[in-house]
Amino acid sequence: MDILIGLQWGDEGKGKIIDLISRDYDIIARFNGGANAGHSIYHKGKRVTLKLLPSGIFYPHIKNIIGTGVVIDALALRAEVEQLQADLSDADLIHRIILSAKAHLVLPTYRYWDMYFEESPQYRTIGTTKNGIAPTYSNKILRHNVRVGDILSNNFEADVFQILKKQHLELQALGQDIPAVQELFDNFLNACNFLKKLQITDTEIIINEALSNNKKVLAEGAQATLLDIDHGSYPYVTSSNTIASAACVGLGVSPRLVDKIYGVTKAYCTRVGNGLFPTELTGPLADELREKGGEFGSNTKRPRRVGWLDLPALKYAVMLNGVTDLVLTKADILNGMSEVPICTAYEINGNTKTLAAPSFVDDAARPVWKFFDGWDTPLNKINQQAQVPKELKLFISFLEEELKISVKYLSTGPQREEMIILGN
Image (cartoon, rainbow, N blue to C red):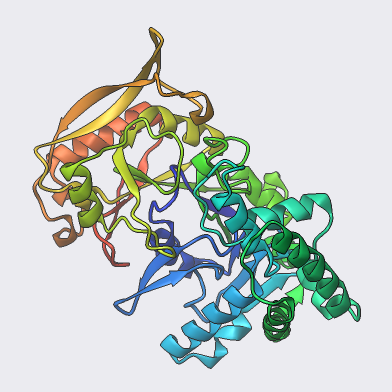
């Protein structure tokens, strides 16, 4: 099994690289997160954003598994499948999707809990997508939630209505605006009936049987390393484990079966929501980089915060994940700049750190910069390594030397074919 994860705060371009390499796999499996994720892929020239569906969905030969570690919003999944079916005119698409019976369901009250926690002055504002992801994982741990397999139970409707009614009363008492409980229940139940059209099973058995028969499996991560609930910039993180080892837990696969680990990083940094961002840019240059890079949320359309490449955090992410193959994206966005900075270390209270866990970097951290000559070659016009401008080659060589791994893929634009395989 191979694994692909993001090495920053998300939005690194994971969807594109998965789409590029997925044709070589038999199974693509999502292992974490929920509908708060957004993988953008250009399919037949059209930009498609996948939220819950694995990125192999466009290929008829690929089984697309939504694994046990994912939290599934039935309404969001139904809407995504139906929209994709309409866009692709592909009625067979539904047969490529397999749901883990053990994956937890996002109940319709959970997004209103998210709203309450984000908007109430009594709680810290995290900057979540308000998709109900954190309440789902919370109730999973509390053992108060329902799972996909429960849809097939005779007691499902009664159990869900009881949970919704209790939570609805609690939210009303807190002053949270929320639709009527019957409306929430009916909409949710209709979406769950749609899920019954999909294959619901013990997906860990399917994956392990495939691996034992020498089939190729790619585990697809949502969000990214620095948003990991345990190892990211807590508390401004997501609610699941996002690092490579989480794929084994989220899919039920032994670590002994892991082969390649692809790590994706931009040539600069972005993040959405609150939290420390040592290399953040502000002002006209930030606005220019954001517009040029299309740095707006795939799902929410929120403007992303932008900044220069953070090498101490990138080293930390590479270490946590055991990356074997590095993917560099969006170097084309920096085209035409006179110089390109990289933060090579932090100075913190007189100490220099070249590798740092983001949770323990505070406002006192001062970036130490190394400046590279910019490149001025339209990268989407090149298709082989020899054509890569020398300034970008030096930039890449520096990253490889510092990270002690090779850049395997260089993205030269947003389209699927705009990618160069490097022979380092």
